Image 1 (cartoon, helix red, strand yellow):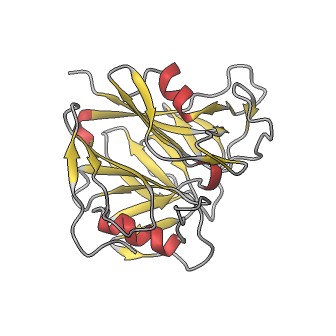
Image 2 (cartoon, helix red, strand yellow):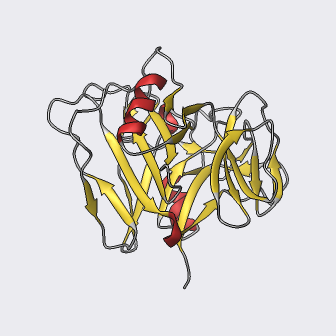
Image 3 (spheres, rainbow, N blue to C red):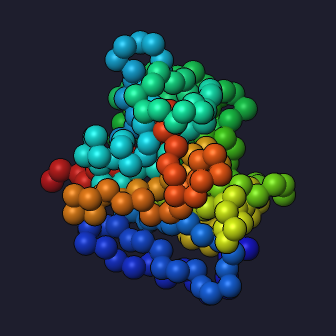
Length: 253
Protein backbone atom coordinates (compact mmCIF):
# COMPACT_ATOMS: atom_id res chain seq x y z
CA UNK A 1 0.00 0.00 0.00
CA UNK A 2 1.15 3.60 -0.51
CA UNK A 3 3.18 5.41 2.18
CA UNK A 4 1.60 7.72 4.72
CA UNK A 5 3.51 10.75 3.45
CA UNK A 6 2.06 12.78 0.58
CA UNK A 7 3.50 12.24 -2.92
CA UNK A 8 6.37 14.47 -3.97
CA UNK A 9 6.20 15.79 -7.54
CA UNK A 10 9.27 17.02 -9.40
CA UNK A 11 8.94 19.66 -12.08
CA UNK A 12 10.15 18.90 -15.61
CA UNK A 13 11.30 21.24 -18.37
CA UNK A 14 7.81 20.93 -19.88
CA UNK A 15 5.19 23.37 -18.54
CA UNK A 16 2.34 21.55 -16.81
CA UNK A 17 4.18 18.22 -16.53
CA UNK A 18 5.46 16.71 -13.29
CA UNK A 19 7.06 13.36 -12.49
CA UNK A 20 6.67 11.48 -9.22
CA UNK A 21 9.70 11.38 -6.99
CA UNK A 22 10.72 8.12 -5.35
CA UNK A 23 7.95 6.78 -3.12
CA UNK A 24 10.40 6.01 -0.31
CA UNK A 25 12.75 3.29 0.86
CA UNK A 26 11.26 -0.07 1.68
CA UNK A 27 8.42 0.18 -0.83
CA UNK A 28 8.21 -3.02 -2.93
CA UNK A 29 6.54 -1.05 -5.72
CA UNK A 30 8.44 0.12 -8.77
CA UNK A 31 7.33 2.04 -11.82
CA UNK A 32 6.80 5.60 -12.94
CA UNK A 33 4.09 8.26 -12.70
CA UNK A 34 3.47 11.47 -14.65
CA UNK A 35 0.99 14.21 -13.78
CA UNK A 36 -0.29 16.56 -16.50
CA UNK A 37 -2.22 19.80 -16.35
CA UNK A 38 -4.68 19.08 -19.13
CA UNK A 39 -4.85 22.65 -20.40
CA UNK A 40 -1.33 22.22 -21.79
CA UNK A 41 -1.81 18.92 -23.66
CA UNK A 42 -3.74 17.16 -26.42
CA UNK A 43 -4.60 13.45 -26.38
CA UNK A 44 -3.41 11.20 -29.22
CA UNK A 45 -4.62 7.61 -29.75
CA UNK A 46 -3.27 4.86 -31.98
CA UNK A 47 -4.60 5.48 -35.52
CA UNK A 48 -6.57 2.80 -37.42
CA UNK A 49 -4.73 0.28 -39.58
CA UNK A 50 -4.68 1.85 -43.09
CA UNK A 51 -4.52 -1.60 -44.71
CA UNK A 52 -7.81 -2.66 -43.12
CA UNK A 53 -6.30 -6.01 -42.09
CA UNK A 54 -6.62 -5.13 -38.43
CA UNK A 55 -8.10 -2.37 -36.31
CA UNK A 56 -4.61 -1.02 -35.56
CA UNK A 57 -0.99 -2.02 -36.14
CA UNK A 58 1.32 -3.12 -33.35
CA UNK A 59 4.11 -0.93 -32.06
CA UNK A 60 6.22 -0.84 -28.94
CA UNK A 61 5.28 2.16 -26.84
CA UNK A 62 8.64 3.87 -27.43
CA UNK A 63 8.24 3.31 -31.20
CA UNK A 64 4.75 4.82 -31.05
CA UNK A 65 6.05 7.95 -29.30
CA UNK A 66 8.95 8.33 -31.72
CA UNK A 67 6.96 7.65 -34.90
CA UNK A 68 4.20 10.16 -34.05
CA UNK A 69 6.53 12.67 -32.35
CA UNK A 70 4.74 12.47 -29.00
CA UNK A 71 5.90 13.87 -25.69
CA UNK A 72 4.40 11.06 -23.56
CA UNK A 73 3.03 7.62 -24.37
CA UNK A 74 1.76 4.58 -22.49
CA UNK A 75 0.23 1.28 -23.45
CA UNK A 76 -3.55 1.42 -23.37
CA UNK A 77 -6.40 -0.99 -24.17
CA UNK A 78 -6.31 -4.78 -23.98
CA UNK A 79 -6.09 -6.55 -27.31
CA UNK A 80 -6.94 -9.86 -28.92
CA UNK A 81 -3.65 -11.78 -28.87
CA UNK A 82 0.01 -11.44 -27.92
CA UNK A 83 2.53 -12.00 -30.70
CA UNK A 84 5.09 -14.45 -29.31
CA UNK A 85 7.67 -13.06 -31.76
CA UNK A 86 6.99 -9.52 -30.46
CA UNK A 87 6.77 -7.99 -33.95
CA UNK A 88 5.93 -4.38 -34.67
CA UNK A 89 3.78 -3.20 -37.59
CA UNK A 90 1.52 -6.25 -37.37
CA UNK A 91 -2.30 -6.03 -37.79
CA UNK A 92 -3.95 -6.19 -34.36
CA UNK A 93 -7.47 -6.00 -32.92
CA UNK A 94 -8.41 -4.07 -29.78
CA UNK A 95 -10.63 -5.58 -27.09
CA UNK A 96 -13.05 -2.80 -26.24
CA UNK A 97 -13.98 0.66 -27.36
CA UNK A 98 -11.87 3.06 -29.35
CA UNK A 99 -13.09 6.23 -31.03
CA UNK A 100 -10.55 8.36 -32.86
CA UNK A 101 -11.49 11.86 -34.10
CA UNK A 102 -15.16 10.93 -33.85
CA UNK A 103 -14.77 7.74 -35.90
CA UNK A 104 -15.26 4.26 -34.42
CA UNK A 105 -12.14 2.07 -34.55
CA UNK A 106 -13.21 -0.77 -32.24
CA UNK A 107 -16.52 -1.82 -30.71
CA UNK A 108 -17.40 -1.57 -27.04
CA UNK A 109 -17.31 -4.38 -24.49
CA UNK A 110 -20.34 -3.46 -22.34
CA UNK A 111 -19.05 -4.71 -18.99
CA UNK A 112 -15.79 -2.74 -19.31
CA UNK A 113 -15.18 0.99 -18.78
CA UNK A 114 -13.49 3.70 -20.82
CA UNK A 115 -11.81 7.09 -20.89
CA UNK A 116 -13.78 9.70 -22.87
CA UNK A 117 -12.58 13.01 -24.30
CA UNK A 118 -15.45 15.25 -25.42
CA UNK A 119 -15.50 17.89 -28.15
CA UNK A 120 -15.14 20.68 -25.59
CA UNK A 121 -12.06 19.04 -24.04
CA UNK A 122 -13.84 17.62 -21.00
CA UNK A 123 -12.37 14.33 -19.78
CA UNK A 124 -14.43 11.68 -18.02
CA UNK A 125 -14.59 7.96 -17.18
CA UNK A 126 -17.69 5.87 -17.70
CA UNK A 127 -18.99 2.52 -18.92
CA UNK A 128 -18.37 1.45 -22.51
CA UNK A 129 -22.06 0.60 -22.60
CA UNK A 130 -23.17 4.24 -22.86
CA UNK A 131 -21.04 6.59 -24.97
CA UNK A 132 -21.46 10.24 -23.91
CA UNK A 133 -22.80 12.71 -26.44
CA UNK A 134 -20.19 14.70 -28.38
CA UNK A 135 -17.43 12.17 -27.72
CA UNK A 136 -14.40 13.00 -29.82
CA UNK A 137 -12.07 10.28 -28.53
CA UNK A 138 -12.63 7.20 -26.43
CA UNK A 139 -10.20 4.66 -25.05
CA UNK A 140 -11.43 1.42 -23.56
CA UNK A 141 -9.82 -0.25 -20.57
CA UNK A 142 -10.88 -2.87 -18.07
CA UNK A 143 -12.82 -1.70 -14.99
CA UNK A 144 -12.81 1.55 -13.03
CA UNK A 145 -10.42 1.54 -10.09
CA UNK A 146 -11.88 4.67 -8.48
CA UNK A 147 -15.28 6.28 -8.89
CA UNK A 148 -15.84 9.56 -7.02
CA UNK A 149 -13.04 8.60 -4.64
CA UNK A 150 -14.37 5.12 -3.86
CA UNK A 151 -11.97 2.19 -4.23
CA UNK A 152 -13.61 -0.29 -6.62
CA UNK A 153 -10.63 -2.64 -6.88
CA UNK A 154 -10.47 -6.24 -5.74
CA UNK A 155 -7.98 -8.42 -3.93
CA UNK A 156 -6.32 -10.96 -6.15
CA UNK A 157 -3.09 -11.75 -7.96
CA UNK A 158 -0.48 -9.03 -8.27
CA UNK A 159 0.54 -8.01 -11.79
CA UNK A 160 2.15 -5.05 -13.52
CA UNK A 161 -0.52 -2.35 -13.95
CA UNK A 162 -1.13 0.66 -16.15
CA UNK A 163 -3.71 3.11 -14.81
CA UNK A 164 -4.96 6.58 -15.65
CA UNK A 165 -6.79 8.96 -13.35
CA UNK A 166 -8.35 12.39 -13.11
CA UNK A 167 -8.26 14.83 -10.21
CA UNK A 168 -11.51 15.86 -8.55
CA UNK A 169 -11.49 19.27 -10.28
CA UNK A 170 -10.86 17.64 -13.67
CA UNK A 171 -7.72 19.68 -14.30
CA UNK A 172 -4.97 17.13 -13.63
CA UNK A 173 -4.48 13.80 -15.42
CA UNK A 174 -2.33 11.06 -13.90
CA UNK A 175 -0.62 8.26 -15.85
CA UNK A 176 0.89 5.53 -13.69
CA UNK A 177 2.71 2.30 -14.50
CA UNK A 178 3.45 -0.11 -11.67
CA UNK A 179 5.99 -2.82 -12.45
CA UNK A 180 5.76 -6.46 -11.45
CA UNK A 181 6.81 -10.05 -12.23
CA UNK A 182 10.37 -9.11 -11.25
CA UNK A 183 12.49 -9.96 -8.22
CA UNK A 184 12.28 -6.50 -6.63
CA UNK A 185 8.96 -5.36 -8.12
CA UNK A 186 5.91 -7.01 -6.65
CA UNK A 187 3.08 -5.83 -8.89
CA UNK A 188 -0.33 -4.84 -7.52
CA UNK A 189 -3.84 -6.19 -7.12
CA UNK A 190 -6.51 -3.87 -8.50
CA UNK A 191 -7.45 -2.85 -4.93
CA UNK A 192 -3.85 -1.90 -4.23
CA UNK A 193 -3.59 -0.12 -7.58
CA UNK A 194 -6.71 1.91 -6.78
CA UNK A 195 -5.22 2.87 -3.39
CA UNK A 196 -2.05 4.09 -5.09
CA UNK A 197 -4.05 6.10 -7.65
CA UNK A 198 -6.01 7.70 -4.82
CA UNK A 199 -2.76 8.53 -3.02
CA UNK A 200 -1.48 10.14 -6.23
CA UNK A 201 -4.47 12.48 -6.27
CA UNK A 202 -6.94 10.73 -8.56
CA UNK A 203 -10.66 10.97 -7.81
CA UNK A 204 -11.64 8.72 -10.72
CA UNK A 205 -9.31 6.14 -12.27
CA UNK A 206 -9.34 3.39 -14.90
CA UNK A 207 -7.37 0.15 -15.11
CA UNK A 208 -5.83 -0.23 -18.58
CA UNK A 209 -4.04 -3.26 -20.01
CA UNK A 210 -1.27 -4.48 -17.74
CA UNK A 211 1.13 -7.39 -17.46
CA UNK A 212 3.91 -7.42 -20.01
CA UNK A 213 2.28 -4.55 -21.88
CA UNK A 214 2.74 -1.97 -19.10
CA UNK A 215 5.10 0.72 -20.38
CA UNK A 216 5.44 4.49 -19.91
CA UNK A 217 7.77 6.61 -22.04
CA UNK A 218 8.80 10.27 -22.11
CA UNK A 219 10.34 12.13 -25.04
CA UNK A 220 13.05 14.10 -23.29
CA UNK A 221 14.56 16.70 -25.63
CA UNK A 222 14.25 14.43 -28.67
CA UNK A 223 15.22 11.18 -26.96
CA UNK A 224 12.43 8.75 -26.09
CA UNK A 225 13.14 7.26 -22.67
CA UNK A 226 11.34 4.31 -21.07
CA UNK A 227 10.55 5.38 -17.50
CA UNK A 228 9.63 2.01 -15.97
CA UNK A 229 10.91 -1.55 -16.23
CA UNK A 230 8.58 -3.40 -18.63
CA UNK A 231 8.75 -7.18 -18.90
CA UNK A 232 8.01 -9.47 -21.84
CA UNK A 233 8.19 -13.27 -21.66
CA UNK A 234 10.07 -13.07 -18.36
CA UNK A 235 12.74 -10.64 -19.61
CA UNK A 236 12.89 -7.40 -17.55
CA UNK A 237 13.48 -4.30 -19.64
CA UNK A 238 12.06 -5.82 -22.82
CA UNK A 239 9.19 -3.83 -24.34
CA UNK A 240 6.17 -5.54 -25.84
CA UNK A 241 4.64 -4.53 -29.19
CA UNK A 242 1.00 -3.73 -28.35
CA UNK A 243 -2.13 -2.87 -30.30
CA UNK A 244 -3.16 0.37 -28.68
CA UNK A 245 -1.53 3.35 -27.00
CA UNK A 246 -2.34 6.61 -25.27
CA UNK A 247 -0.16 9.58 -26.20
CA UNK A 248 0.13 13.29 -25.50
CA UNK A 249 1.37 16.29 -27.41
CA UNK A 250 1.80 19.84 -26.19
CA UNK A 251 -1.04 22.11 -27.25
CA UNK A 252 -0.18 24.57 -30.00
CA UNK A 253 -0.84 28.13 -28.70
